[in-house]
Image 1 (cartoon, rainbow, N blue to C red):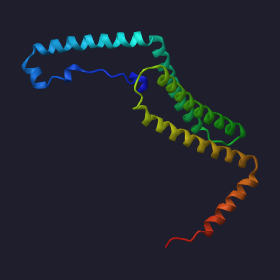
Image 2 (image 1 turned 120 degrees about the vertical axis):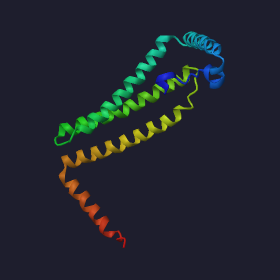
Image 3 (image 1 turned 45 degrees about the vertical axis):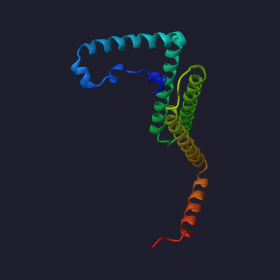
Length: 175
């Protein structure tokens, strides 16, 4: 949403006049088209005078790049099966990069919020999704680090499995 229009709102004058009125008075169609074209020019001029075009392009490019890197880092980390020490390290580094991508996306949005005069109320739902993804990545990284530690020290894995087995046997079984 932010990458597409930065929350700038533009009124469509076509929607102000009802469909039946537009069909009955065909001359309104050309007038509305002229008003719409004029409004497009006004909005473009206002946007370009308020914010230099290169800044808007740079911010959009950054958001696209960070989002793309986030997805590719998660996918790459997920493809690693972790059978060797190097694979564990590579997966942990990719998970770190994905967490860093989320931080970069948030930082870019904070820049937009601070320097651009736009409404970011719609960003809140995306912010919540980013937070959930970040928490998921932290849990995933924690389990990868635990598995890596158990890979290096097999006795820890045996100890953990025994504790889990003991805990399950202590729980009363549901009837």
